[in-house]
Length: 148
Image (cartoon, rainbow, N blue to C red; front, side):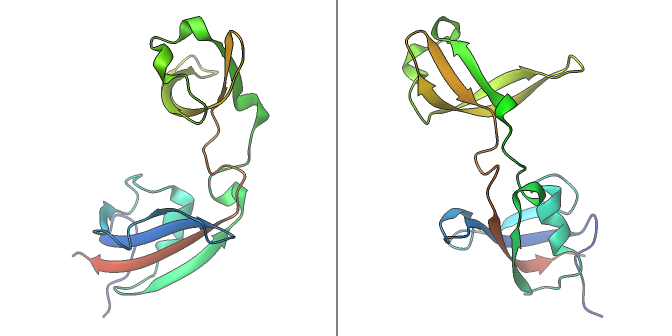
């Protein structure tokens, strides 16, 4: 009986993420495949679910709408931060990606990434949306190996 991808299955995987115009954002096809356990959070759950039932050497390409991939863009995730609050002013460059701490509604602080979108006189505009939020993406995957 052929081994299939199920929850907790350990696999080696090649994958790529691109937009509808085939601009590739991330790919392992020209590198070593990634090793992961299904359900461990290595790749987003909505992408991981598409792998269930595949066998070794199976490949697939699917298109995912923003809500099913990296989420919809949320204008509430655009924040203005005073330049004086940056510990290092050399990091203030448009399109720089920064790791920032964000206080959630429940009071917990989590780390996330932000992109500098605009620099004004004494303010920096940060976008806390995932860089692929709001985009329809193509997810291509190939199961290289399934472990016992």
